[in-house]
Length: 218
View 1 (cartoon, one colour):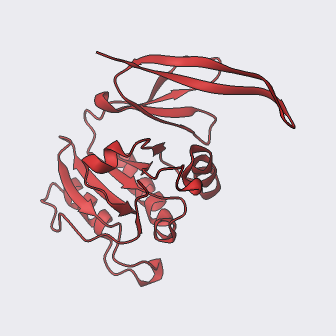
View 2 (tube, helix red, strand yellow):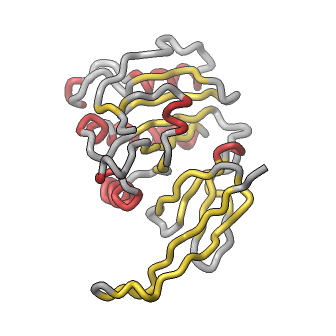
């Protein structure tokens, strides 16, 4: 079995065009498949170990450690696929932050994922993702789906688009965040309603909706 090794490029001293003092540090090893990394607001490098359903953190001078424990006992998980340059994705950010604030304490975690190819979509580089998360004040992890593996696996075709997994990690909802491009004109909060159905131990009343926004840049 092949394992992935996560390396971090450390730029210690860069003046004008002087890139002589750059080196690679091995942060962690032993992962079957890792996603990320991105910087968190509190100075941690966040990356995921996808097959074990773990999100890990690293800070200089500290070993890698769990950022979010395995979801045993969790009520469920929300995966939201976003694109930095997509106006429709930007329009739902406040709703996602509010959703995390409301349902995070109830052990329903939210993770944002960027599946766009940064070579074809410059706003979707890891650096731009980190800047967006910081400027907007994301309260949830924002990860890079490097080769869009997760997006393909969950049938995502555009941003924003989301799916909800129950406590058994079964897909219970897939589709849009809400029913309008303009938050001021929203009538149905589809994602929120799906989460509340699961928290209320009910079947999700509308398990799939038609999403709209920007096509994923493969």
